[in-house]
Image (cartoon, rainbow, N blue to C red):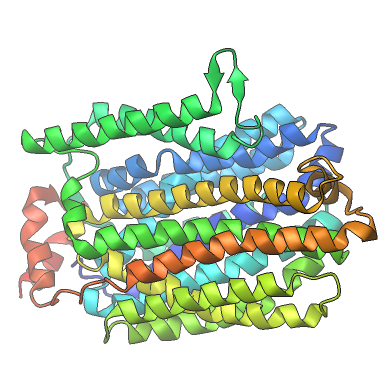
Length: 516
């Protein structure tokens, strides 16, 4: 363990930037209509404002996690924070849609540099038996961002204009930079060799896979251009990723240092945890879309009013996550994670059953509260169980894998729910072209009252998919092994320090303290 006198100020400093990234993944969707109007563009172009960000965010996560090990998580986080903040300013100043899309791609790259470092620092400055509370704060941050993003987006867009959803990041980024510079220590770096072939294969494979899944609906799962098809891109991406894994295995066998240490997956909890977080990413991305469509199209709520229905979820999640975090330091996290995942499934099935044209709006606050309980029991326990057994020099690589699998789950969830919504609308509203009601509704909220029942049914049926998916995650979490003993953990970390180099003047004293 890296001995840090005040780990909590360090964590709070990192959480500010992490919170900003999470908000930015949800805040833009509220502003899409205003962006279309302000930049005089169409729906296909404005979709790329989000797509470019997600692509640039998801593709490099494996690489940036490893770079954090090599050059120090603090250094990479600060670079990413500067890139993200300046790109946010660029977004707000964009005068046309092409410039905004380019700025969003750069913003996504900055986010990719920051995200793995947060978890890597938690892993390195908190000992395993005191890490639960820190992971609880990480989970509470995710829960609160779900609420703040849409509400803040609605307020800023209505009051100041769409540009301010990006300008608001600038002062937050400056505050985060000052705090990280002051409170986050420089941690021991490890002289990893640079796996160039692995970097290229992972980047190409991830790009092809994520682009194919993310944009499949836009191209109606057919031709992208010329002989290039959506399914061709997805298959090619999978093939390249298989080649990447084979190359990592061969490099490890030859005594080299692969970008992705496959030995990480020998740890049972790491493998199960990555499976669980992929399912969680799938679910939390998939279920809001049909519910938001229902709120706005059938019930006529504004984006801000729709977001207010998430208040019980965010408040309960934010309050419960730190409490659960402290408890998982003293018990097997599988019970907490499984309970939370089952609660999430129950909340989604409950929500699906309420999606009728005449359901009183207040009733949706009840499953929202249950979702809050679920979130409080999911993020911290799953994250802690996954990373608890990692050695400090593996923190960056492990965090990169964890965040990559979460993002892949999110992309899968986005693609799957869009396709399912279209299919269920075609079945429940046979008189309308497949997908037309949803597209029209998302633009202007207009839907004949005679179609409300069929539309509600289609949205309720669509929610069943993420509800079933999260149940799979609950089953997986039941197989988490009891965490390993933490005796000697700090000493082991200290002994490994000679393999790398300490980048701050206090390094030697920290290593000595670790040995003692």
